[in-house]
Image (cartoon, rainbow, N blue to C red; front, side):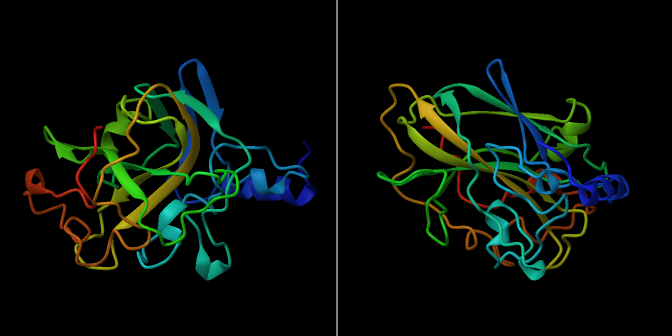
Length: 252
């Protein structure tokens, strides 16, 4: 791989990009994968193959009606998100996955939320996108507890967040949709900032369940201005009552 001369300038200019964030690395067992790097990957003559779908940068999605809210994107700038990635990571059901974010700003409080979508039989995750179908189920969330927001735990956990693939999950290909919902300006809509990222997995094991029998959601669709937890004043002192947006967590 070789960076173009234009890319060199782009990478240098990226140093000045306002600090938001994205998933930088994914660790499964003893293997660590580099996430999609929006300020360098597009500028290689042969872009690096990743397990993470492309993102346009480290900024948020605020219009929850756009496909951008699914796996990130910038439709207004002609960058429509959720394009499949070329690689797939293998993980055993019941295993932990650790995501390492880029440095997260301490002003951007809010929950971390993780969903899965099962790839339909006969299709490949390297070419499949969910579109507007209701295929997503939530497997983990970290909202507000013990006086701390899930997103701000990144500041004391080495920028790491860990979730578990349900042990009962049946083998197959699944798309992970992980996000931070930043609430520092969420006192009205639009205001909540969604930072989504999608990771392609091949799940192994002897599980038999493919997710909940009901309550699947779509992106866009799962979140609107009226969804509990999307409009929230995080400065009013009642964060113990914060409702993490989306359906209940499915643990298997």
